[in-house]
Image 1 (cartoon, rainbow, N blue to C red):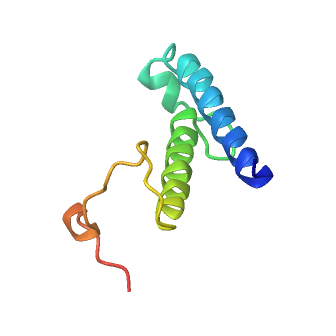
Image 2 (image 1 turned 180 degrees about the horizontal axis):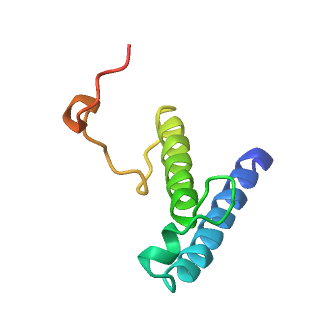
Length: 88
């Protein structure tokens, strides 16, 4: 057993567990309540969820760049196809 790999697996399980609890709680909110400014760092619950999605997607992309395949990381269209310029 690799202690480092075991730690990453633990963190991935925690992330899955926590996201499920978070999304269950957020499902009870209507759109207006989710977007209501609440004085949090990102302002609203909606903006915080957006940040979490961005962070998870960014990290999964970094992990995928290491040559491993992840079922949870769908292939994204090229930046130009999404209306964004390619990175240099």
